[in-house]
Length: 265
Length: 297
Image (cartoon, rainbow over all chains, first blue to last red; front, side, top):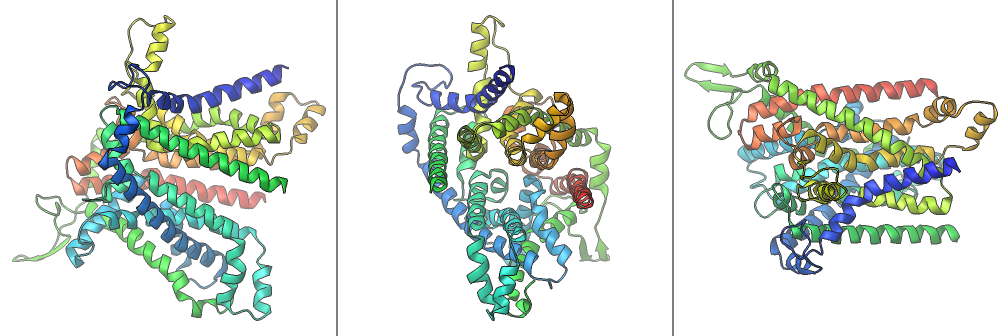
């Protein structure tokens, strides 16, 4: 009895800590007062203003575009790295390749952002590319730090499954190219999908690297939100938080239901 | 290993290889170059390392930026603050996260799956907005002050924002899921009969925990701690949103040197020193830990 009580107490306090701030934010998004924390009455006022805020809508669109492109490129290269490191023996300067593909994981994003910005400025001086900072430079930066995360996921999947399948395919005369497409790729498909999703959220959530590498016309959603809440509070951002939470909760519930029905089958 | 792969599919290795050299390694080398350059007015705001002038070939390199950083307690303190923030918050995340992960992992399957989804939801939702939530809560007119006044603990709103306690709270809150999820991953595989066996053999609960449960969940503890420690060391957003001027952190100092003071050489030297002081220890630890694991297997 004592043990059960302690367990329920721990879980209740833990989950309250995780959810209390989020739920408060959602509750106050319906507050009809410009001063965020003083309750005046229930309204959808800030949702209406949010949907008429061109700046936020445009930033949202920019973020989605950069995130999906970045995730796709990062996944393709992450798979290449994961496959190369686990399956190809002759890689020139292999330790250097391992260093390159794993150290973005431990590099503080502020250093990553600074180095990429200085790089873009210098290369613009020397070869005139990139002609200006903007969506392209943010995209390149996001691909660069996401690749390492995808590579880790792919690598751990590849090293945990039986290589004999590939060797069997090889013995049966399958040409090396086809081994990847017909044997390896289908097996690691779930890892590829979760790699893509991780890269997508990393890009969508990134503020620091994007702040360094952005330019005119490339304000991502975190950059716009940060400029609104850096010095004060914003009721529109409360409404935005509530919408994002709703999307995340719906996604989580649908994944839960899909999982459950899969298990039942 | 696949034979004959190399000849036909050189691009498979070299596309990502080239990309990382170009956009990861070259920029880092560039930071190093700028960090040993002399700053000057103009664009770019530093002098070229090598130059040809009337005086002939000149090398304008200096370690002055590094001397400048390490002779100023202001910068040294910011490194120490970042390290201590990372240590404190990793420890707190572990202390809060471990019991949660443990009890979630010990729950019945049906409840466990729901709790797991509830752990993943904050993990997925926007980092920036979760920090912002605390900014809303801790306001002078915020809900926590209102509650404290209502129950009579305080009579005037106290200022809870803009100090390093708010930063620690914000860090622990946003990074807690990064600690819980890997811990859960190891604890859920853990055979509960081992606890019963240990109890049956007469071990006290504390002994069971220290001698049985803890060693078996060590990989989860290390993984979770890494996921918290590494990003917190360079954290910029949370100190900027919740912190004040009582403690300054490394991430914010670099940001200000670059964007406010426009001193590229100093910002670059700070970044390079940051890599040596904050990132190298992590890499060394990971290598040692990998070796230790390898020996034990």
